[in-house]
Length: 382
Ligand SMILES: NC(=O)c1ccc[n+]([C@@H]2O[C@H](COP(=O)([O-])OP(=O)(O)OC[C@H]3O[C@@H](n4cnc5c(N)ncnc54)[C@H](O)[C@@H]3O)[C@@H](O)[C@H]2O)c1
Image 1 (tube, rainbow, N blue to C red):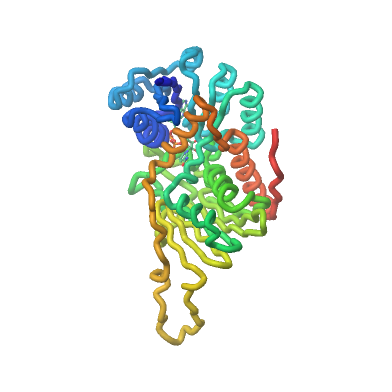
Image 2 (spheres, rainbow, N blue to C red; image 1 turned 60 degrees about the vertical axis):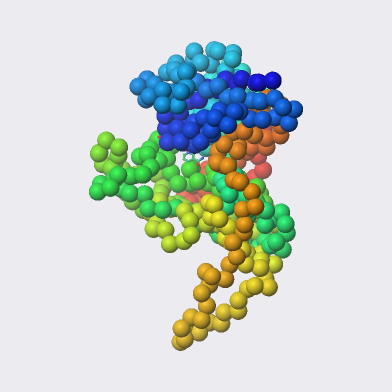
């Protein structure tokens, strides 16, 4: 049996909407013949593209052979055949649209952060629960090959007791004057939902919680290194949002995680995100796709002596963790799981309450920075 699932895809002409959600996920799922279920049934996503700009929508729909598109969200929500509402609009617009969709009885799947404040994010989780609609939030980093390999090491007990985690994230985002910026300008304006903390702490929360242990406290220093940038129209604007955050998190079990996130850093590491984990029995460094490890028995014994040439090539003393499987696009893996959750009720733990935890960490991170102090992260419930 084929389950045709109508999906209202809002904000689909944006960077994430087009590349990750439409092309790499929904179109890819359609092209592979849908999502196969254990009983032989197939789920076939049937998207309707929603946005503000008719021209852009029509071009996108034509390019990927999608029949349905609309600029009228209300009319889309009124169609009972479209049972899922998906949102990848800019963050400030998300909560209102999701509320409308919940009121219309749609299942919800959306980008992070789910709202611009913890209150807003919790409200969405609560409304979805009360309405009995299924809901999910994108937590794509969990499905990156590098992090899946790291998870395999954790599950095998490779690390012994995990002591610390250090994450380096970021790259140089051009200011837009002599080279175009490679990220949308709203990301650098607080009033438009931008900011490193708001953007990335939402990710760090689920990465830390899911891989290592729940975050219990945060100390952060957020700052704006580049005060002015040039927007898409060539106009100079004030950067009102933070573009870097230097944070320390305390996790359950006494693990310390240090996380540097910056749009004003030049990359001198293996990847745009690297996660080093040190444990009593071994260490590992994961990037987006790769992961390398060093076991206790293979650990060299450096001795501090700057008077001689360094006898070690430290970077060569690590072993690649093999793939041993095909890795699919991270967004697609999560879409497939959400579709199975909607159609056959398979488990899907990454719901709006989990999403709210991300917003909670951003809120507390900014507070910690403003007040220059450690802040505990209380448990969330609705
Ligand atoms: N999961 C991830 O790794 C990841 C990465 C980047 C961004 N994001 C999130 O995805 C969302 C979109 O980010 P993006 O980089 O694709 O941004 P973008 O600016 O490229 O796209 C935003 C979309 O929202 C639409 N939009 C903007 N203002 C609107 C308005 N006033 N009315 C109606 N539609 C409007 C745009 O047309 C576009 O379709 C953000 O919430 C961001 O936090 C997630």
